[in-house]
Image 1 (cartoon, helix red, strand yellow):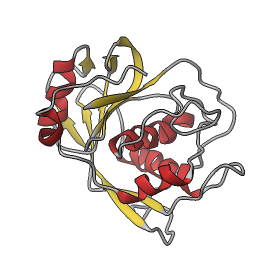
Image 2: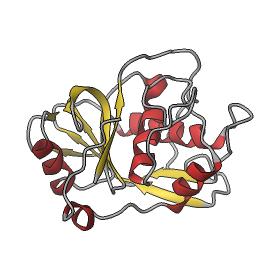
Image 3: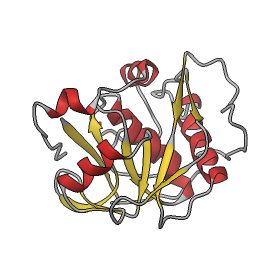
Image 4: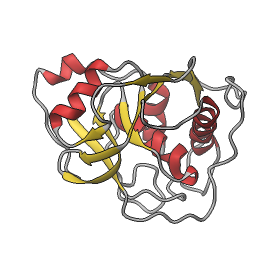
Length: 211
């Protein structure tokens, strides 16, 4: 199983991923596919349901708004499922494969918010980490201008997408507020939904994605 990481190298805070709302119904679009997301956070992290709703709305905006000629409007709608849950497992700091595997397998939910990610296939400072493919992801709190794109990026890894080192690509390994562009193949994988179970890929061993 590969691990996809988004490294905090640069944050170009020009532009914003769209305002969040308090509606569970997402953007109210005719989406080709709808994905319900359960959000869990370490008990030491302050995040409200309203904030999570806003980030999920920003995920929708990333995929539904055409930012340039190379960007595909993707028929995907993310919806926050239920309330947020807090977990007490560990310290919320990921410093090893074991730390990641523990939260991945033992904490329910598709999105897990942690304090710090110091290891994602290698040591460093990461904003997110996700199996490629997989069924959940880990992220840290960041600027609200990039959190929607960050969550969408890591969800893309769960759908089997690797990094794409193209300027403004959502799957670019460098996080910026302008990294929002998806191509047709990426859109199809976002629309497919449903990751691969941890057990079915872990048998083959952890293959760390060092890109």
